[in-house]
Image 1 (cartoon, rainbow, N blue to C red):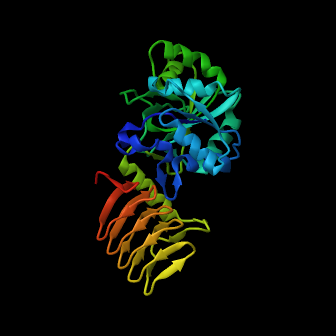
Image 2 (cartoon, helix red, strand yellow):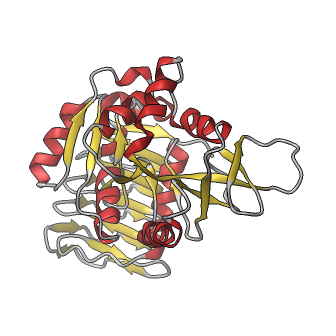
Image 3 (tube, rainbow, N blue to C red):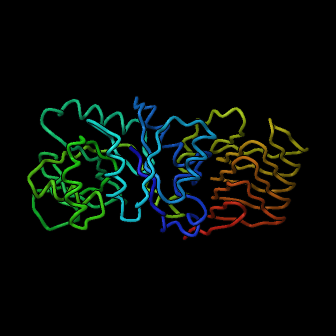
Length: 334
């Protein structure tokens, strides 16, 4: 279950144009990354709850033939809990929940599912937590591995961690969700706090792999850098220059559907999508993603940037730490 209904206002004004699910990182939208990770983990039935600009997500899913079920949440502005409860109507039994902007590794999902098999007869809810993470909701964990509180207190005998925004539970949680919503609560964490208050155990599963909460423009660039540096891109219609490699173009170069003019330097990691045109004497990289059908004009210098939405950069552009969508530049805080 993927929650993708919110406005993503902390990434505004970018998400005034598109829903957060369609923000591109390292050549794929957040939605595509999430669905790919779930399927790589053996999860076949995926429900995506949409609200803000949901028609754009619906169109994208249809065009790309992405195998998911969309659930439209008309009153998504009530909050994530309402979105969660609406999506829950499509399930019966155990489910895995994460927001679409939680960029997780397949090994994390597989590990949590295996952990669930080991303790399935004892625990009802499992929450992914990162002991060394600096992002995510703060949590406290006791010696038994149970989540005992959200937020940091001065309790003794507990470890502090952060929620990795990954929850495994059963649809029997529906009743407490409805009760919490009727009390004016609007976040999923409020449900978990109530479960703790009622002495229902929440088992913490320690996430060892890197994960990202895409909550700002800077988060987009950090995740983009991580994915590019990790490499492994196999797309046949894209050009990828790995970290540490440099390509200096002498004469105009045509690679697949991509044209790179003479005098241009590509400093990896750089990912360039299909039907892109890179002008003369440009310097591209490091940590740059340029998705399909974008144009970088002559003498431009681009680094630590994500460019998507068929954008065009004018001649002599100087671009650093930016997210560019449909030629509109959004500057990330440095």
